[in-house]
Image (tube, helix red, strand yellow):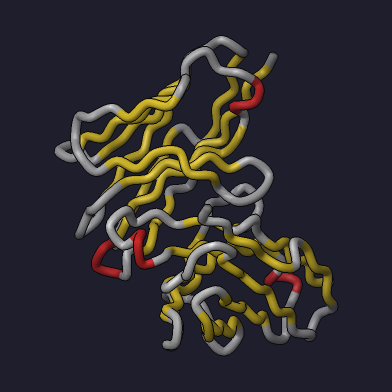
Length: 112
Length: 118
């Protein structure tokens, strides 16, 4: 059975701190890993990673994938209170209609 | 582009009644739509996948007779929660993917529907 595990479950930091969120996966047929940010409503797309070792960057957020060790990290530098959210990673299952299997999420709270 | 809407955004219903939730792709044709359920402080759990014009594929443990999914057009999928009970109270989110996303595998999420069954 496919498994996506995120850690930590929750994290409380202060503005300006840097955080690293982890996502490990065990899937029979991997194609891509996606990161989402969920605030009050539906998730918003952050990154999609398909190749190992290539960092994707968007402002203060960056992410990288290690297909050998089966994990990805999401880094947020100089955190702001607006970064408070649940961060979800998901793995694409190409053998099942490209559906996504989500991890449990990391709940990040950034205090002023 | 790639906007997905859901209606209603929230609904309260009495136990035993049925509720229909609509998911629409506003500016693209959604060949595949996904329905997720999210309980408080938990992650999204895929309920079913529906391809336009065919029957939905349900995940293990999801009752197909209770959660009726219809994807009759390329822009609309509906989820009907039949004979709803308090334990069905949850946040239901749909996502859609168009044919051009077959390579990117990106799904576009709707804003979600919060269902409360009293």
